[in-house]
Length: 351
Image (cartoon, rainbow, N blue to C red; front, side, top):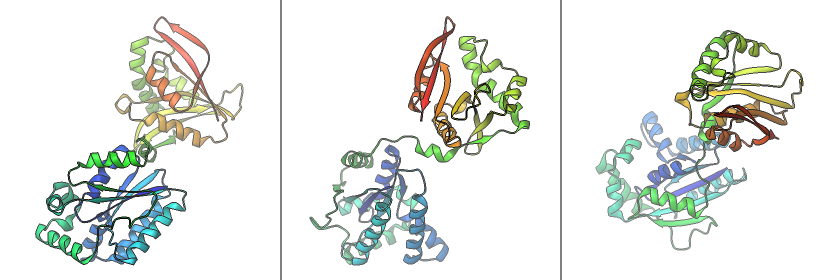
């Protein structure tokens, strides 16, 4: 797992740049005050040992997630060996996972930082900064007590960049970082933690049938396919649900049932190495959020023994074709003309 360490003096813009960087990557932001503020609230004062322990627990737990990396903000006192040791310890944690650590030092003029110390975003996220007189005095004291800007050539890490963001907007700085370190574009990894598939019980099939009708009705009204799942009877859905070689799963996002997927092998084949998806659907109000893609990945995880996956879709529905191709499916076989407006095509994925 990768780590981006945003370094800089008080109010230089570390958190704000991190927020913008999170928008354009799949990295998550862990800014300095996410631990500082709760500790101050609970203990009534800043407690460095407790804060460091909590940060360590967050790092360890985060490394078990599917995210590719973390954005971490830190005010580094370069004249303190303990800070150098701390950064090394954090770096080692992430590098042991096989990840890469990137270091970004932000510097800005003091007058600009004093103005940034008053911004709404900063005060909303950092309660201890809301007494402006105290927070400004603390910021100036920290700069005189410690050296919070590195000397030229002092930081010799391979993946290091220094940016003067005095006159740069946070989104501009975030894009500089992304381009400099060639970070991947944002995908839909966060959805993986929000979506799961849950096996449907027999007494829930009627609800599933209603969701199926709602989901497929727009396609039925468009193509008037007499084999559409939108006009499939409840009895037929119940029969499919009872089949020993097939299972229905609700697709659940944030605790809400948003669709369903039926998975299984053909009764005539009874071969668990070849699985079919038929049907899969997402309620209209939840479509185009990446849920279908994640549900299919969850299906792959549910049946690791399957080496071949098959499904069919409507050729004219380019969005559906794109989804399945993104999942790794490839078109196979001949086209099946249903009517003058609609053609079915087959897709297959080999693991």
